[in-house]
Image (cartoon, rainbow over all chains, first blue to last red; front, side):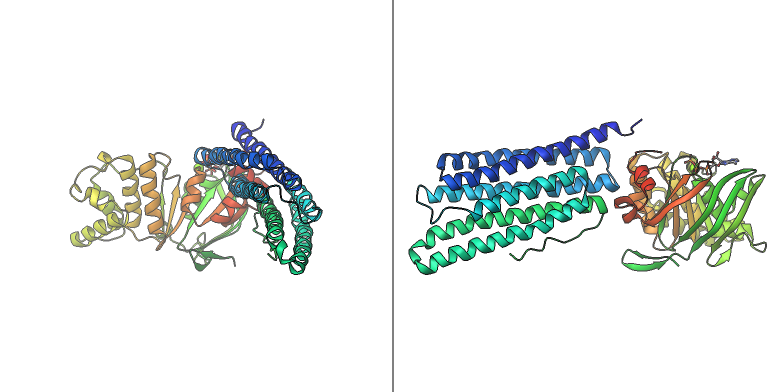
Length: 222
Length: 267
Ligand SMILES: Nc1ncnc2c1ncn2[C@@H]1O[C@H](COP(=O)(O)OP(=O)(O)OP(=O)(O)O)[C@@H](O)[C@H]1O
Ligand SMILES: [Mg+2]
């Protein structure tokens, strides 16, 4: 017979909630980049409004965690999981904020032509959302090795960001009139770069849940 | 020797050392091969499922088990480097040095004053002034003085459960022990009285070595510096599964069995 059935059920519910929130955040990133590519102001505005849903989900999960701590006094692995969930929530919410930030950039751009077709920025977004999905998978499977592998992937995002930055810099040097437009794209790319860093923070928490050790692996150059 | 970083200072597990300890009630083995180094001036919690030998182990530390017919000990327990089972050890002295507080408060049906003065009198303290001083000091150390100073002549049985338990602690303190053993000292108390005892334990830990058996996981986590987890083997003999800093045991236990026990998944 399983002991602490009620506690286990509530813990699993919180884990499911994290997955739901994770997919909301992932959708937000994908949508924000689509809006950026297509300069779709309506889509961007919608996404900014929807950010409130992510925030609400975060508070809902946080409240469940606090109730569980207050009523069940979790210890050891259970305690590490719940404390880490509280941290992971914050990281996810921040990624949501970055997606909203990209949408605000879309509003600023309006229907102004992009300097060039966007290639590396969507690649950064693909990589970041892939990392996010993998990190949540590692969370559910309690897989520290997988979490470490995801952290290693952050280098790819950093390299892409470097590339975007250098390319846009050459535009600005050649023609100072492009500075405003180039800077906006750099901001967008920067939001993605920070999102990937947040995912590495999530992975560090997963490693802590599994091993009980705090490891700082995702030291970014930015 | 095991060393611990306790409350910012290095402590050595050298106050009490159990070495290759086996203990039997007749043919039944209650404890198997216990090796445990307990640091001085700290609180050590002993946790584990019912029947795993916690109380038996605690009672060995001041040789209360001597009184049980057919019990047998192998191995040693050293207090400050001396085996307490040696022939030349005076059991009365040992029990003065290693006091015990029980699950149910057990004051004698006499006055508060006489409860505390009882032990010192047994150990030869006779003068009224000396006894008054001991009673006052012991009650102050047990954080009970302010509540009872005006009714020292009244029966101890008129005190509340929590007060009675602090009285029992004062009684132990009155003979100036080094070690205080507590077997589920709060299980008969309400939450407020429990927290008072816990506060008192933390204060006493500066000068005494305290070992507490408790079924309350949160209490062990709140109050102790180190924690020992005992479990029964298939033949029901108790053995030590894991021992370490309380902060480690309750956040990141090494042994799966400890994890399962403290997260309430078995036991
Ligand atoms: N006087 C005794 N004679 C024979 N067997 C005993 C005696 N006292 C205890 N035992 C047995 O020794 C084992 C350990 O008992 P002990 O009281 O030490 O366990 P415990 O861990 O303190 O349990 P609990 O948490 O229920 O207080 C049990 O199987 C018990 O039945
Ligand atoms: Mg017992």
